[in-house]
Length: 183
Image 1 (spheres, rainbow, N blue to C red):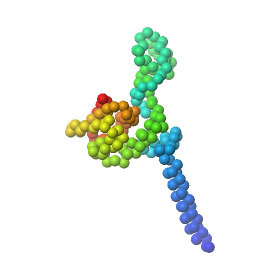
Image 2 (image 1 turned 180 degrees about the vertical axis):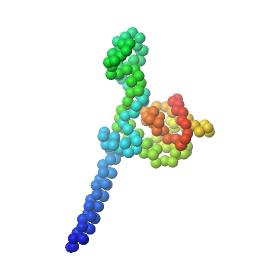
Image 3 (image 1 turned 90 degrees about the horizontal axis):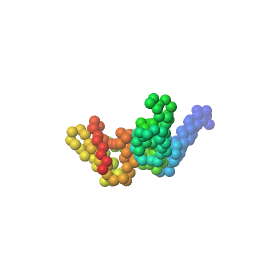
Image 4 (image 1 turned 90 degrees about the vertical axis):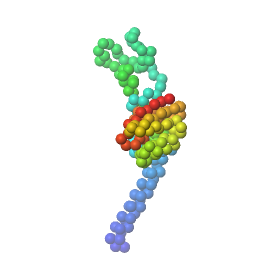
C-alpha cells in the first residue's frame, strides 16, 4: 500500500470513529433518563435553567423576629436596625428569591422549551402547544388589539406555568403584549 493510500484510509478511519462518538454523545443525553448535571446541560441547549428568579411557590422557611413591628408573614432572619449593615436575608430578598427546579419539573420544562423553540408562534400553534402540555388549564384569548390574555385555571402543572410566566417564556406571536391571569 502506498503512503497516499494509507493516509486516505487513516482519514476515513478517523471520520468513522468521530461519527460513532457523536452518536454515543447523543445517546448519553436522553431527557427521560438524565438526572442532575446531565439535565442542566441539556437545559442550556433549549434555554431552560434549573434556577428561576422571582417565582412565588410556597415553601417552609425558618423565621426569627427581633423587633415588634414584623408582619406575620416575615421570613428569614437578619440584623435589624434603623440602618442595617449586617444581614444575609431581608424581606425584599425573600420576595426575589431563586427557586431551584426539581429533576422531574426540569424534564417538563426542557420538553416544553424544546417545543417552543421549534414552532412558528402563530396564535393557533401557541394554543396547540400549550394544550398538549396543560390541557384545558390554559386558555389564550386574542384581544384583537395586539395583546393576548393567558388564563390559568386549576393546579395541575401550575409550577411549570409559573416558571414559563416569570421567565417570560410563554409562547406568543411576535410583537404581541401578554396579560396573565390565574383563576
